[in-house]
Image (cartoon, rainbow, N blue to C red; front, side):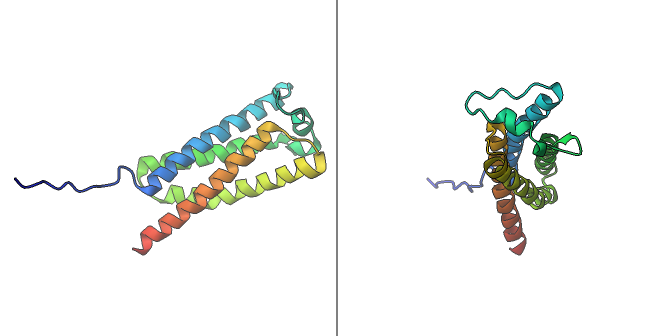
Length: 156
């Protein structure tokens, strides 16, 4: 009796997995930055039980630019990354994922700057801000990986 061979096809392409990962990480970052933005506008400091520097960081002179909380900028960054990942999944096109890849260094560099400020200027650490730094770093890694995979795919 002949054995039927089934072609094995990956369930999801690598770029689709990257888009899903970006979506998940962006959602975490958006939630974090939105909470910090809400805390700023409500006048209540963020609930920080592990570290005591949250209030010091979120009320410092570096927490706003022209009166706008930097967390709001972070929320817009994460929302943009989230929407680009959804557009990639919906359209099955690489352009939105490519744009997310090109945008990811901006979030990473902003986070490097804010971590520097926390550690060396303000000398206090905000747990939520560090969470944002981790998510933007993950988005940077995913974005660079996405650009690499898209470039490899177009070389073939």
